[in-house]
Length: 299
Image 1 (tube, one colour):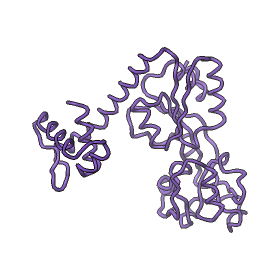
Image 2 (tube, rainbow, N blue to C red; image 1 turned 135 degrees about the vertical axis):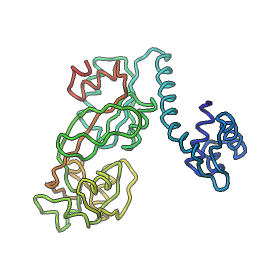
Image 3 (cartoon, helix red, strand yellow; image 1 turned 90 degrees about the vertical axis):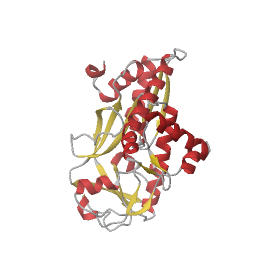
Image 4 (cartoon, rainbow, N blue to C red; image 1 turned 120 degrees about the horizontal axis):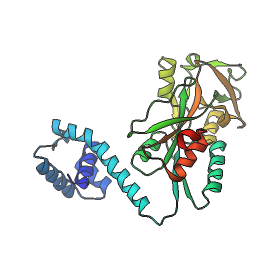
């Protein structure tokens, strides 16, 4: 099965249109149509109906297999390219915005001392993008964060067979405007805030969908969506009264016009985890030992 044809099929299935898939792939609708026809002939099965574009039962089953297959191919290519490279040690680390802490930065500096020739790349990505990039081989290690009950792991990533290891836990606070009626409280319960105005910032604050699940209630409706990765930009919106945000206390302190109140119920922490694939070696293994504090596991 030609991977190029398979990628074309996945694009058409996702877009629901030959024309949109062609635009996404930098191709033409007629070329996309030929690719799909070639794949169908190879598999001896119709995969898509044409008007409208929908998946056949065979196409739906192929789509289930296509994602993992393409991820494995990308990971294999990335690993072979690294092994065939110049020989210089490299490390690509991806992190969600709130996962890259001073402790991680210090670990990177320590790594440079033990691996003086290593070339380090750090990429700030969305929480869902980190495991996806790791699974396809674009990263050696990933750092993700989110709310969790004390000592509980984060929900497992959907992308690939990845291993998670705890890095840190810390308290969460509700960020609100300095003049907000609740700003002088000593603590806040999440369920009491379900009907408040919230900022939907899935990569910069605690995701609202997780808050609904953890509070076991509805509400937490977004008054404004923030798609950035800069925490100070999010807090500027909080200060202006656009909505509340749940953040780790280390990220929310000291911004003019805002106040922070500890979250007291339910008992939640801000958890950071390290993600990696089956093979961890070289500088990636050394960094994993540093950030997790587990040299026996990664020594």
